[in-house]
Image (tube, rainbow, N blue to C red; front, side, top):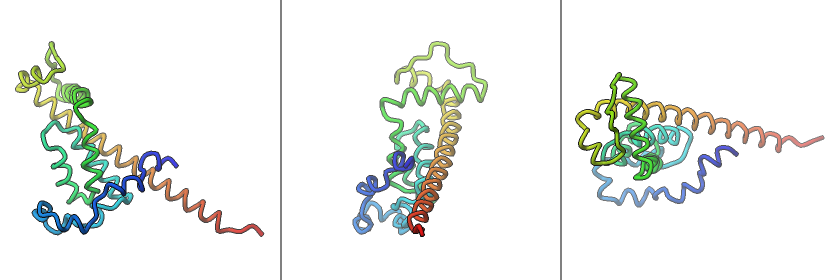
Length: 179
């Protein structure tokens, strides 16, 4: 029951592209035949858990084209590509300032950077101070991304496994007829 709230598998299947249509895409041909591996497009425990790790990691990295990086890393990780890409949008124009500020604070703490006294949550201020804040921002982003990614991987793996065990038990109880 818990897993259905977290991972509506049947709902997500509606958005996953048809493998035959993918093979006809000229843009995807550049990536070779590896792009058509089953785990990259199907929802199973391992591919979903890896997608959560991959997508959430890249969501915490302040860079352009996070979705492209997530999709490209999904191939060697054997993670679900559509889910990896979708999870990058955890950081969107509304959440990005808060996530990146958190990353900056984590990085400052880890490297012992005292920080900018007049911190402002504006694009202009960030670009103006980037030469001073880039190191704590990126250290914090990588560490936060790895921690959140690893926690999400473990959580999805455990919840999926508990769901499967519970369904096995229910099936077993239904198959045993009372005498």
